[in-house]
Length: 407
View 1 (spheres, rainbow, N blue to C red):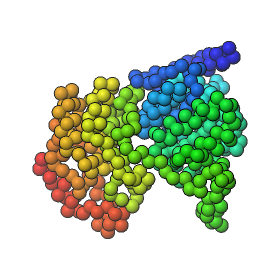
View 2: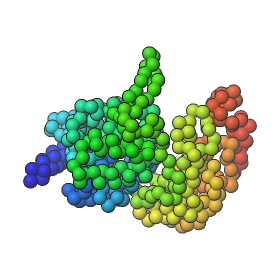
View 3: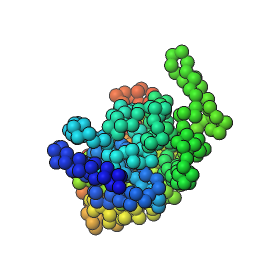
View 4: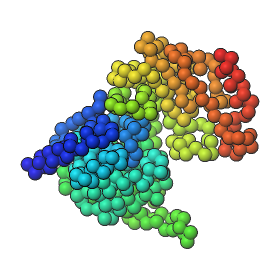
């Protein structure tokens, strides 16, 4: 009864303030393909947090993958939360309203986990901003059993120490399989009324999970890391990153959420492969997502058709670090055009290399409608291109531009 009253109070406050903000549709939830479950009868509840505004988070395919992966588990749910804009933050302060998730308009502290995706370092202060709005202490040592378990993951988790004091656990590597194992552990231990420390000690046994409180960091005089020592014999000296061995065996969201408002990337997204063969020295993703693993052409064409049926988008983007390096790219484009062109769905290749540009590829991409062509010279001189391991020559660039213009 108390909980129902608390929920009603929160809902009334949210309904009262949303008409006064610039873009209320960012906070209402209930978009097409959003997932609703019976909140009170679910064992493991995850608040998925993107430490940036709604439009940025909803343009990131990885966020939809995590949302889909968790909600597919029978006794788990995921809800989304983004950093509120300044106008909503002010209204929340006036009305004594804490940070809430979109799907259920529940206080973050009613969830078992609050998971942040660490995509870029400039978002780190926003993590603290969101913790503050949720009335959750910044540092893990200051939190009680009543606070959710704070977890992080994503590309910036590969260098976790700058933010380690704020997290209870951090996923190193690809999260699809880790999250399922973590939720299975949570369901099993929840029946035994576990303490948070007990849960973290068991979670640290899962490959790819780093629990900062179970390690001691030894620093040099200049504050660089000298050594990382386990505090317990139960944890491994080194946390190995998790890698999905076969992308065909993990689910991909073919029913993505469709926002009510305009976002930067309003289109279907197919993930061709992870990793990259090139080894450009400045590229974080090219190193951390190794080795290269491809989805099969058959799986991709099936996913494309399902996505179109579930969204109605008229463009499909083939996502990877270097799409022209996909081994079946010509056959895939032919099959996609054969299937999707009748519905006037166009195809875009966002990552084309100058030295891998192919006129036949370009013609295939532009069968439905003409699109722009972006070519990157990568650096201002051949010496600098060589330094960063971008083996692209000026002749490659000029020859590609000429071929594109001629066609």
